[in-house]
Length: 372
Image 1 (cartoon, rainbow, N blue to C red):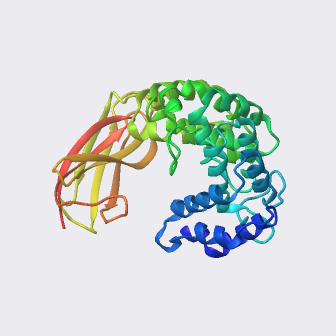
Image 2: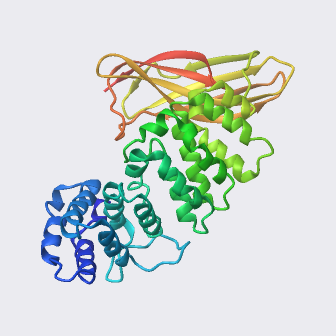
């Protein structure tokens, strides 16, 4: 993926800048922007282009932004961005990453101009990374400007309003103000929750999911409120926004989705193999019996407490299934979980635990040994 910043793309960018700046040092820009490119990962490559922009664009921010905007590839407002890339016709795609970094990092004294530039750039890729510097430096003023974006005819611009202010956007610096006080950005999410674009609504859901990691009760209250007379689109949004809270077994959130605390549920868990070799499967057998006189909606997860290098156990929640149990009904379920190495988890031999979580409550638990 890092090859989206390749020498050909950087050469195109250099040539486009040269068309806008008399006497532009095309080779100098190219050499600096591609310096040690083979040793850099994706974000480092983008930042290296940003360094070159800093050195070779005019010192005057207004003039520099005019140059950058003049090199952008012509697009229509709601154009599909999937295949857009930087070529001889203009800058688009991943090359917008250093462009937006330039506008965000160097535009803090020229906020309206910087935001307008980011608004144009996001129609060619996304400016969600670059805009964060402005939110961090001037959160209230930046929010005031983007208020008008919430009704912009371009869905890329509306999405930038919500994606850019995500407190915990992956690959990006966090926004401490919004992480501590997410009520500052709730008007953005409220306005866009029923947006006509799934692309925008998905961003609203991801923003709420970010907030849920530090303010679970706030998001649970929002989800409950939004669930009233919710359309199918909004129902999908709040389900996606609640994914972290659901996996954590947050009671208030689960109740909104109809998963009450199961008072009269009998849970029996067993495993077929008390010793599991790495790359083998842990086989679980479960019997659920609803002893109550009412039907029960069941959200079933299993949790594995993994052994760490320091000897401590850390839990990981895995989805199992959702089902309905009639009054007095009993069901038997089987699950095979493949324990194999993955990039995000290293396994260590020793005692592990597996537990069943139902509607946010831990029921049965047992142990197994992992050998490597």
